[in-house]
Structures are given as C-alpha cells and as structure tokens.
Amino acid sequence: MVKDALHDAEERMKGALHALTESLATVRTGRASPALVEKLMVEYYGAPTPLMQLASISAPEPRLLTIKPFDASSLKSIEKAIQASDLNINPSNDGKIIRLSLPPLTEERRKDLVKVVHHRLEEARVAVRNVRRDTHNDLREFEKEKVITEDELKHGETDLQKLTDKYVEQIETHGKKKEEEIKQI
Image (cartoon, rainbow, N blue to C red; front, side, top):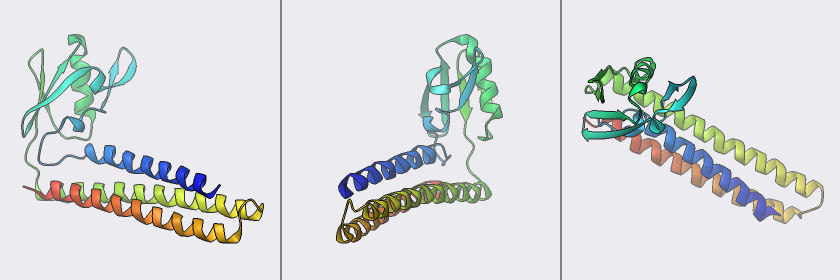
C-alpha cells in the first residue's frame, strides 16, 4: 500500500519535472532553438494549432530560425502569432519561408529571463511539494483506517521526504543549467 502511494507520487513528481523541462525550453537563450516557437499557438482555419504541426522549424545558424509552413496559406497567420507572442522578434517573410533573426540579449533582458526561470522553478517546486502533501495525507489516512501500521507510516514518510528532496534537487540542477545558458554571451 505504501509502495503504491510512493510510486504514484514519484510518477507525479516526474510529471512536474517534465513540465518544467518543456517550460524552460521555451525561455530564450543566446542561441536559436526551435523549441522557442514550437508550442506557439497559431490560428489555423479558426482553431488554435501549435506551430510545430503547421511548419518545419530549423536553426541553420546560431541566431536564426527558419519556419517553412506545410501550407503556404498559413504564412500570414504564423507571422501574426509570432508578432503577438512575447518573443519580441520581428519575422521577415519572403513568401515561402519566415525568418526569425534573434538579436543578442542585452544584460537587462538576461536578468528578466533569469527571473522568469526562477519563477518557473518555484512553480515546479510547489508542484512537487503538493504531491508530497497529498501523498502524506493519503499515508496518514491509511494509518487511521488501520490499513498500515504506525511503523509503515514512519518509513513511508521518510521515503517520501527522500523522494521529494531528490526531485527538488533535480529542479535546482535544471534551473542552474538554464541560468548559465542565459548568462552565456
């Protein structure tokens, strides 16, 4: 019973870590990365659609992204979505391909991006702690209902704390790595 609860908690913590990883991929660093725009929602025939489903995205140079739509009629809507996003990048369009030239990051913009990263890290830590709280409450409930013994509860709490510490540490590692990428000139 305790093992099942801990296994479930670990799966949910992995989910929080995965969500953080995807979220951090969208934060701009000094290099061009297709992940910056892949999840950008584009209005396509009246339905919001992720850009990665509408076009091939590549980074031929360190500061350049090219977006080649599968359907040429979606070019204008892709361009509008990029302009409306918080990327602060002006797309240039030659009728077939959209080019996004990424300007070098200013020191002020780097500091802002670090703040964004810290905010997302805190959200991930909160998600992991919420999983711990829910699982801990479940374990207490099992003990109240006499499904597990008091000793099993104590061991479960200890293992749960170790699991939480492990995932919080991984979150910190991801955060430090992303921060270094942003600060790199």
